[in-house]
Each structure stands twice: as C-alpha cells, then as structure tokens.
Length: 84
Image (cartoon, one colour):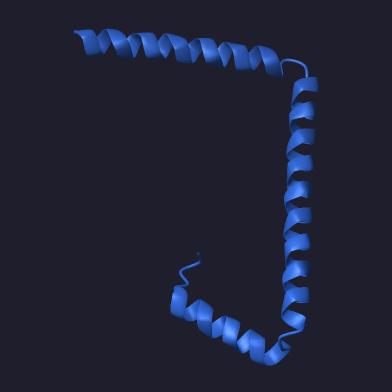
C-alpha cells in the first residue's frame, strides 16, 4: 500500500486524530468512502461507453476476428514445434 508499513499508518492516524478530533474522523472517512465509490462508478461508466463506441465503428469487429484467427494459427505453429 504505497510503501507504507504499519508503524507509518499508525503515526498518520494518530496525527489525523489530533488534528481533526474524534468526532470529525468518521465524517471524513464517510466522505472519502463516498468519493471513492463515485470515482469507481464513473470509471465503470466510461469503460462501458468505450466498449459501446468501439462496437459501433465499422470494421472493428472484423479486425478483431482476423486477429483472433491469426493468433490461433500462431498457436498451432507453436504446438507443432513443441511436438518435434
């Protein structure tokens, strides 16, 4: 986790407790949790939109099929070399 060990996290949490107090820490944690959830949802939405756009572009599906067939042929060549 970012190169932070247990002692470093304890020191950071101790300083946060002293600065913000016991009553504010749960509110700050809740806000961070909501922000992370919103961020993850936004990234998921963007990824879903991206796949929809890619499917709508002419020729993309055909190119993907050709690439898959090329990979299958390459794998067959590798199997023949292994058996020799």
